[in-house]
Picture (cartoon, rainbow, N blue to C red):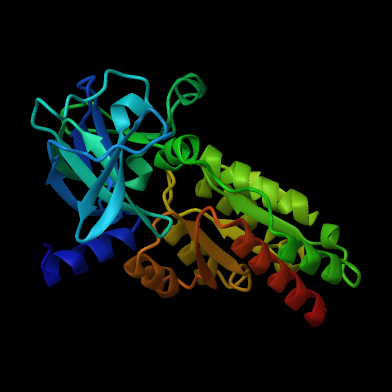
Length: 317
């Protein structure tokens, strides 16, 4: 259990474009990393995991964690590598919170904690992105590669992601669309996760809203700064910005802070949309000036935020 000083230190790291990651090994002996803010606990894997019928091959079953049943996913098998032999060898489970749900990820062994600036975290090449569930690359002090996995993509492939809007939301869209033309409103979406962007694109396509999609905050900020001196007010050009938090180059907290700290951009409406859904990250979103926070993979919730924002923007014109 982290003490108060450690928690405060980690909070300060997250607010200064810094990433603290736990590095670990899978069955291929490659070094991987995961954001510490997603981790609840690391524990030894029990020799018995309760099987789940009709589940994905990478789902080993469930275990009891603090009185609740959580699903355990073998990350090695999810990446089509040799499964981890948890029954006969000492292995571990990283218990994490993603999108308000708790999951267990089976690994060979944890390694160490490493701090890196997001500026030091690089996007993988196009070839590597296609061949693996990678979202970023970092390096140890002695030059070893750390692969940061796109856990959202892995979970979406194993468990599935809802993309369709409910009938209630579709009815709301129809009612608002009688008075407002959604195509007149432009969203800026900033996210490097393929599964997240596919869900967001599906939602905005169903809404009929115009949007620009960017995969990193550095380029997104340059875009906004270039528009800042344009004759068209920036708040009329973009009705809303929906940004991820974990991104190579610049994280969403820093992106939001830079927007809100720039008098020419500060009026922009920013929603941080992240799998980092615990209370501390919601608090940090408020501290950097975000107008709202929403956990990922909730199509109805994000559609409602967009509808409300467009309705509000229309009423102030």
